[in-house]
Amino acid sequence: SGLQYRVLREGTGEMPAASDTVEVHYKGTLIDGTQFDSSFDRGQTIEFPLNGVIAGWTEGVQLMKEGARYEFVIPSDLAYGERGAGGVIPGGATLIFEVDLISIK
Image 1 (cartoon, rainbow, N blue to C red):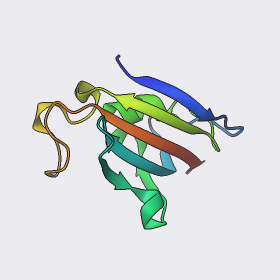
Image 2 (cartoon, helix red, strand yellow):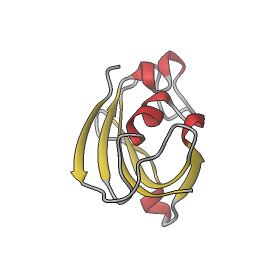
Image 3 (cartoon, helix red, strand yellow):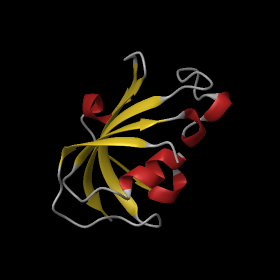
């Protein structure tokens, strides 16, 4: 698919399915290191249905076990493509996310 990942910390819990809702902490940066979002900085985790986010997240988070921390390098075709997002992610951008899978709901 083009998704790349690195295991920063192994988890010991369950692995989510695409249909699950997950609770995560994450940081998102552009390939040049510019941070565009961070739940760590907000001090609050976020929950979302795994099949309701960018394809790189849906694919990548299913590889994780609860308690794990992964780094994902997500090419634009698995992210926001040529349209970009929110004025902060340019079209065609490769995104890097550090993700902690806290729990599966």
